[in-house]
Length: 327
Image 1 (cartoon, one colour):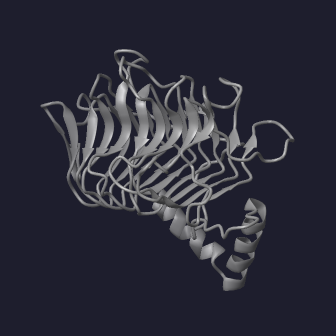
Image 2 (cartoon, rainbow, N blue to C red):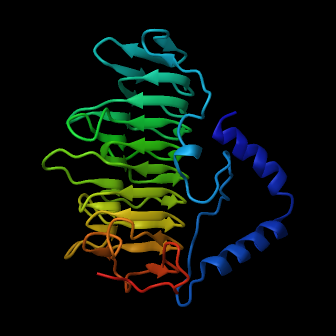
């Protein structure tokens, strides 16, 4: 059963009465705690499609243990809406295509919408290698998959998942294990939840990112992921205004560590005003650096920005109170 199907089933049982939904919303608001500004969180409840204990890790992300994978193109070279291109990639061209139980040592290039990629292992490496590329798509789900480079040096991926034109919508990236990359996930809108993003690679000149946005206004939610960058640059989560203003971002309930700064908060110096950047309920680990990242835990976040919120972010495994924005 796909993640979308499970969500529909969960909604049937969970949405019995509007009063129940309202009660849940109140509880969530109280837990997240916004003392002075209104906090807006995603309206749809997260459906746990796969059991996880605490933050995501290798044991509960990626292709589930025991899954039998068919190699592409050795054992299978095509299916409804997709085919292996002998020039060296998998072309996903058909609306509604489903790729599952596959081992693919090539780029997966998605140009169709309503596509599901589940229980798939993608392994690619090289200066410009991309695990899964998205081009002008909508409603693509990538779940329970392992996406990695070949090693952490010359065989690292440029990106694990990349929205090439920054215009894809309705993306859902969940329960994936992503490693050996320059950038783990790069997109401008959608939902990134319950993923384990770790062990980046490096080539000279790389700017290492866990999850990165280059500017956009569609809702981007990054929730309940483990993102570990064991390098002194660049970030676990980076919101940058390279191509436009950063707006409508939710960074909620993640375990984060490493990079130059753990989080870049979207406000480029002298850039367009960022707004509605909500960073709340995250745990910052000192496993690599005393202040989370090599230089500190956060940069380029404007607490005076319209609807910008920093609240209830704490150091991992401590009882200390939440800390203020740090440079």
